[in-house]
Length: 119
Image 1 (cartoon, rainbow, N blue to C red):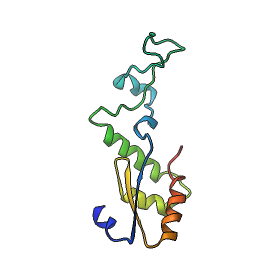
Image 2: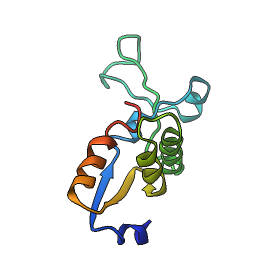
Image 3: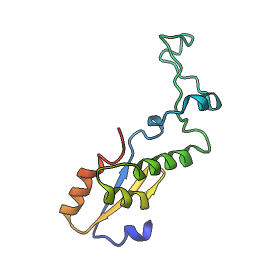
């Protein structure tokens, strides 16, 4: 990845915004990673003050699970297959380094990159 980064004329670094918080756990797996997360910590968990089960970033395996999730979505249906393959080759956890030969190519990759991963 770092050697490919040096080959282009222009370099771009991207980051998946709030990546760990965007990954939800499947219902059967939630008890294995139970994390008490309530809207109001002064009140007990109820229907109006729910628990939230998401991937916790303090787990040792979280970066591995995040990278696997990102790579899975990059391999699934996306409107920009070539760019998704380039991102797949150059992703590390939630960061990506892309290169371009000129400003037009860089701007094209920038504009297309927002639609690669599902929202």
